[in-house]
Image (cartoon, rainbow over all chains, first blue to last red; front, top):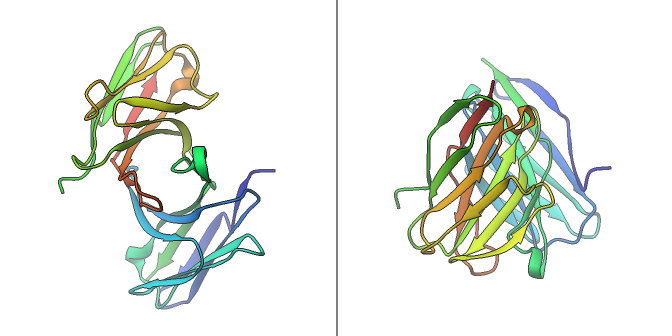
Length: 111
Length: 114
């Protein structure tokens, strides 16, 4: 079992739909990261969470530390949101900064 | 902030050859990370530096792999005697040392072994 699991692996949505991507982790963390990767490889950091909820534009990230679960929501989805969304767990102490990545969720938003 | 840059963007080489990749982090960032990503998978941690010190290496990093950051600025990742399984995207990221700092990623170097 991977230490960081994402679901779904693939997601197709119609423009305007509300999207949820889930991430579960089994390790202790100092932070949970959500990243966006476009074709060609470039990775952009979207959120870094240690508790609660963060919002940036149409993106919302939440985390439940007790349940070791995080979600990324996209409201009013748009074709330009099409990308791979990756969650990553950051450990404590000596492991701080070292990210354990999920396999990613490939999102395709159709116009 | 000019971002993290990696060179080259693509590298095609024959099995058995040595390759070297370069990463230039954001100038104020003390930490520099190397990751490897194969098709359809999330990135995997390889190693990281704080300034010039290499603080951790993954078990994925065999003896054929070596990374340096001699002056605490740019870093190089060398793979000796490349194998088919080394074909992957090699990603570099940098961050501040302080707790809970986001990592800034380069666009990666895609390595293809013929």
